Length: 235
Image (cartoon, rainbow, N blue to C red; front, side):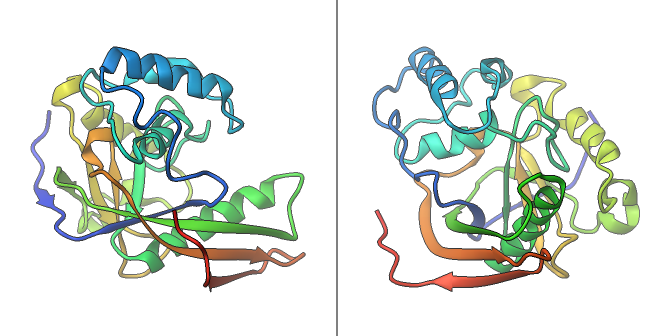
């Protein structure tokens, strides 16, 4: 495996998800044996109202990487309920924990991707969503790609993810347990912002902390307005 510079993230990272998905899963406190957890998460995948994800995605998570405890289900969901088309640094085989070092960067990232998907969907616009801010940290040493826009421009094409996925697969998969835990890279949607992509559930520090709620509202033409919601009861 090639040698890369690594960086430790010492500050909070922020992820935004649709508020309809709760932060506490029904299996969070039911088991601490990994074999039992794999069965329970497989059951959750089969009965979830989210996108139908193959149970086989659990097989791509190495032994020892499944997380347990409070809010563990929401972390696991990012890996087994990933979009079938994948993202910049993952294909549809297995998801990843995408997050940003600043909430505004997370907003810009999610607005871009959600708007793009809505333009391609039959439902389209107008549309309204409420988003939940999840705050955590990671102690994993991440490959440092913050200056790679100039040195590895093929990884940062605006919409073509073929090269970035190829790169990610090469550092994530070759040795399973010895694979890299994730990447730290610049945001293309928020100038000056940076993101992380964590390849392993156990790279996400638990429990997650809930932050603010935001409302995304698209008008009939696809123009979006983002507002922070107040007086939201937190669990």
